Image 1 (cartoon, rainbow, N blue to C red):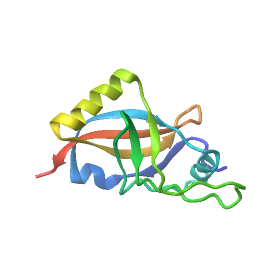
Image 2: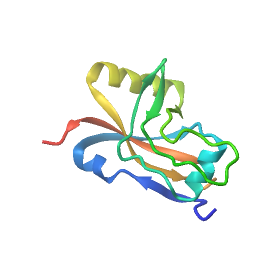
Image 3: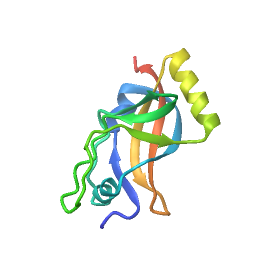
Image 4: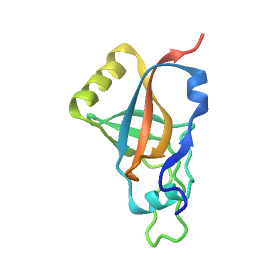
Length: 128
């Protein structure tokens, strides 16, 4: 349990590939073995993105590896629901649907309270 606060994973390529117009902080719905794996500092968000699934936002293709000491493990690349307020969710869903924006994960970290958070960037196309 070495990583109780601080950055777990970072997507450095996102700021290079996309023009980030706005950032937001969201929570994640995780299983117990996923939290243990994150606390050991193992995760990758490089090829992941946030998308709409049944009216809510989900994180797709983020890799949180299996925690070896867990009795029941999780699927490493499963879809994970994102937690944000309803007004924010509706705002970003509309921007994704109508205006061609993309929500790109920038970093995954534990806040001061030890809760896993994800920093998302609202990106418009690629850099030219």
